[in-house]
Length: 166
Image (cartoon, rainbow, N blue to C red; front, side, top):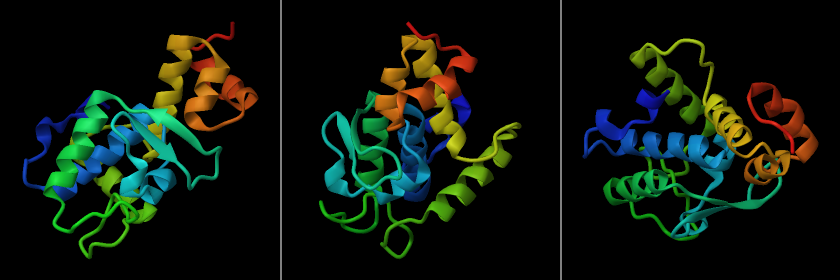
C-alpha cells in the first residue's frame, strides 16, 4: 500500500495521476470516503485541515498530514482548469467534478498495475486509516471523530485489528 501512496511513481506533469495520488492520500491519511473526497470543494481545504461537509457520516474537520497537503498543492498547480473556492477540488478531463466511479476505477487500475493483492477498492484506505488510529490511540472516540462514525461502531470495527479501548 505504501507504493500506492508514493508520489515517486507520478510524473510531475501528469495532473490526473497527481489528482489520484492526492485523493488516495486524503482517504488514507484523513480517513475520508471516496464520496466525501469527490464532494470536496476547493474552499473545504485549509492550511492544515479539511472540512468534510457533504457526508453520509458526521460532518467534521480533520487534520491533514504534510504529505496530503503537498499532494493536493501539487495537483492544484497542474490542474488544467481554474479551480474556484466554491467549485470542485477534484475535477475530470471536462473540468467538472470527478465521480466516485472514476475514483474506484482509477484505484483498481493502479492496484492491478502495482500487483497489489487483497485490496478491493478505495474504501480500504479509509479502513487502513481507522486501523492505524485505533492501534496508535486505542480510543474509539478518536477514531470516531476522524472517520465521522459513532464510537460504538469504531470500537466494533477497529478494536479487532489492533486498537484497544482505555
